[in-house]
Length: 450
Ligand code: HEM
Image (tube, rainbow, N blue to C red):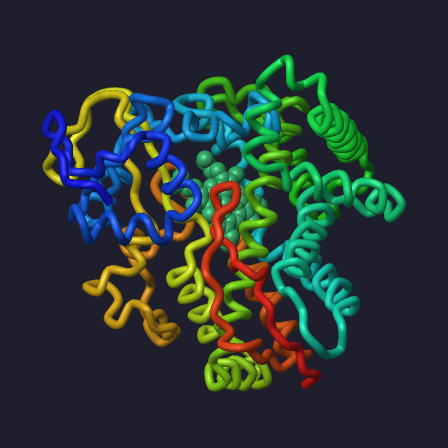
């Protein structure tokens, strides 16, 4: 990194060209953030493309607390996801801010409650068992690839409630291709001249067929006579939005009177697909890599599963994997007016970024931070300012409990069938793609039958 500068009283940061800073931040956040923290201390400043976009990275628990407890009308998150607009649609939770975001969260929340999450479990178990029956009995795999297929199936069946196997066969490759789209595809979609060229024409066609497919699922759910018995998330949202439209007025927030419209529902389903599929697969890939490298930890998980009952240790393994290998390296909040974080006042327009990578490696919270040690999470509930793989505050990942439940189901069934062994050292570097950090070689490991 270049020499230290302080600019307008902002924390110090590199003086590299903004394009270089942007490329480094996007392509290698797991290396850049610790390097910048060592060079400049924390908080530090980054100046990114387009010119004028300034980020201040924070990692101290007190600073993170100020950001997550800050007013959602001041700390906006939607603008950081603007690139995803053509994919997700106008009414996506990831793009909304202020009242529109608060209303959508209120309307989506009933589908993500504790009782609801345990209601999805049996369906997740069924889908996982079906998927694992297609995995090889033994030999080398790229776990990330197989897990991506598994979590996509969970979204299609458990979130969208699709049961028509012919329709599933048609949609699987289209959906996989679309959610796989990288930043170049997204940028191109926003440029009219490029929208007429391949591969954007194909992306637009794919998006249209996914929209048609989602509209079909929504319409089918709305007229399904067995809606009340259905266990999928879409059925729950449709039931909740119908109840909400009829519920007592004094319990509603502003603009809740209509529940979610079909168009809103479609954008939110698209958002759950984009946000909930690869993230979960990636978390599971890191967990499996660590288990393969740590046979004793793996044995302890198996003992716990075999004994039956609570799986606190397995839960601790998942939390530790999410700590050591956060899937999302940082979250962003753009200030709509000046705000004070950690005793410093920052100007309007600046983006404050709680760094998950740095917070998760802080020796004060995690002695020997580079070690994989699930014991850290046994008995202790992690604090929201030191363990933040799902972000925090009003924007905390709405699917966090869903992901933890899904993760537990997957790990349990994998360990019931297989012993995991490392390939080589079993270590893989994090590789950056679409705001996630996944294992460089897609989690190469060896399956041995149990
Ligand atoms: C291990 C898996 C997952 C990880 C690591 C993860 C991580 C995150 C993070 C870091 C955020 C941003 C939070 C912030 O800005 O403070 C987020 C937001 C979100 N996640 Fe997840 N997520 C996971 C799984 C899921 C699943 C399974 C779903 C849905 C079924 C989901 C849906 C969402 C949505 C809709 C948002 C936007 C929330 C909002 O802006 O209000 N995520 N997630």
